[in-house]
Amino acid sequence: MRSRQLRASARSRLAVASSAIILVIAVIFSLLHSSGPPPLPLPGLGRPAPPGDPFAYRPGRQADFQARATAGEEYVLFVKSPGGVPATAARVAAYRPLVDQAAKGTGIDPNLLEAIVFLESAGYPDALAGPDASDAAGLTQILAQTGSSLLSMHIDLARSTRLTNEIANAYSLGETGLVAQLQRRRARIDDRFDPAKALAATVRYLEIARRDLGREDLAVVSYHMGIGNLESVLRDYDGGRPVPYAQLFFDTAPDRHAGAYALLQGFGDDSSLYYWRILAAESIMSLYRSDRSRLVQLSALETAAGDDSNVLHPSSQTVVFATPDDLANAYAAREVLPLPSDPAKLGLAYSPALGSLAHRLGQRPALYHGLRPAALDLLIELAARVRVLSRSKAPLIVAQAVTDGSYEHLLGTPGGYSLPTTGYQFEIERTYASAAQAVAFQAMLDRLQALNVIAWSREPTTIDVTVASDAGRVIVDGPFGP
Image 1 (cartoon, one colour):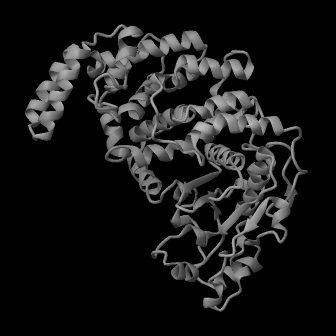
Image 2: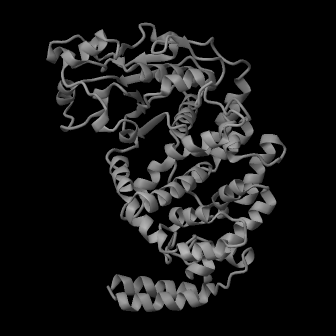
Image 3: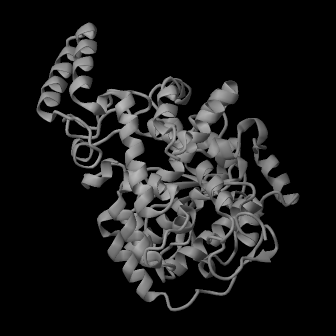
């Protein structure tokens, strides 16, 4: 809901400045007169990728796309939830009676309403998005202006501001009893800090948005994006007809419904990903009630690395290469395949640093020029799509491929589980030939993560990409098979 005031967001995942994205996407679109180069053979599967975009939306598979996107985006909740996801789920669950009461008789799904509480405030009824009481506030993070003008909430902003300042001062002095007393006084003059009234107001918003947008999923999307902003995207997509959000999200790209895609990405505050994170929160709350020990286990996996790569390849279930001999045996068994010998034709280049320490182990650099079949297939298709979207032959530069434990020791990597030793991770240098190439690369990272085909993280000089073991099948047969 905060985004409706068009505040700048500090959380941009773009590989280039988001202020330039709409212009760059428009340039890309104007250059796209064909579907790009012919389909390329994929070494892992021995079959070429289909022409066009193999990751595009397929009608009738809405639920499957939603499931993929939910899994792909849940990592953010695990690493951002105050005190961890299990603790956040416990706080949120305490408000379930009020959630059910607010949703009763409205047709609004109480599970989605509860998920909004999880994502917006992490279950803290006095949460404030900023230092000012006019900012998004309360259990469901409602702006003062929106609450007063749209949702008929009682908000005495002047008194709420004074009390908010007094609360901050009392908190800094450690006067917890006074803090609680002042918070109760504020809730009496500002409905946003009264959980029951905040939930009722959020339901009113969702009812308004559902009426205007025609679908509950679009209503939830608009809670962060804004009704007017989402209506603009829908108009650009198909003249304003309501469609499932999964279709709107996955059927837009720099080369398909480019105007709608540019609007979605141009908000710059992760608005386009909000619905997937709501569904992830819903899934977390369900797991909290049905299997808390599994939730604790999943939380440990999700937070063990700088991305959700450990969920794609848990250490307890993934083979690693400890020595050069282990890696050589994997090549012999075709469990690892060599990188293509003609990288320029595929939109790739190899950094001189790739395998450059091999001589210290008595090995040739070529031993470290390989990947698991699924990762290799994904790398080739990623490069092909970036070339099509950017309309440039400039290559993506591979900085690292498979390694082994001995090589990682030379790199100074701490002991323990290391994803490069699995063969499922590669690194791409963060040097781009143009803004168009950077935007195209970012577009593919976002799309592939939303499909739960990769996990990626941004390092100082590289983008590290971990590939799911089913990536090759997804490329050839689509995300859910033929």
